[in-house]
Length: 115
Length: 115
Image (cartoon, rainbow over all chains, first blue to last red; front, side, top):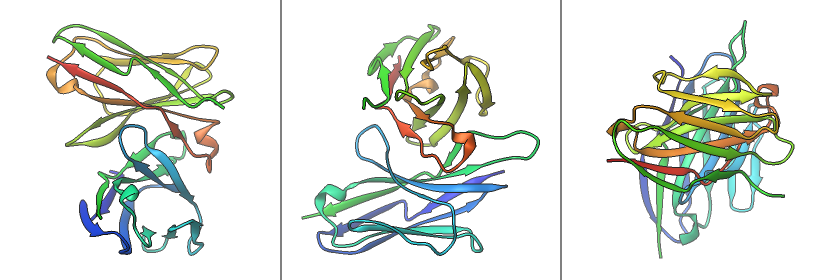
């Protein structure tokens, strides 16, 4: 069964700290891995990763994928209170003989940034 | 460009009733996916529609159904509601998730409470 596991489940840091969130997966016919930030309701898209070793960066956030070891990390540097949210990792898979259009989500990492 | 719109935002129903939720995707997006989010299970895939056809379905009972209209708007229906159906129901749209490498954008969700 396909699964996505995120760690840690929750994390409390202080402003200015750097955090690393982890996402490992066991998915048949991997296609892409996505990171979302969910503050209240709608998860907002952060990154989509398809190739190993290529870092994606947006401001203080960056992410990288390792398709050999089947994991991804999301880094946030110089954290701010506005970074407090649940960070979701999702993997898109495809099966031969039929294709899937769904994302398999991890349970998320709840990040709390204290002033 | 308008985002994904879900209505209603909040809903309270009693056990045994049925409910219909609506999702209007981003203009031009043809793929609509539905997810159920609960504290215990996280985000779980319900089904995905593309060009009025259900392409993929998650592991939910037959009480959960959906459809998509020619304008790509989608509805999901839950019949014979149970207390355990209380959740945040999220809709995501993409140009065509099966094409790969296209991120899904989420709506604000409908918070369903079954009493």
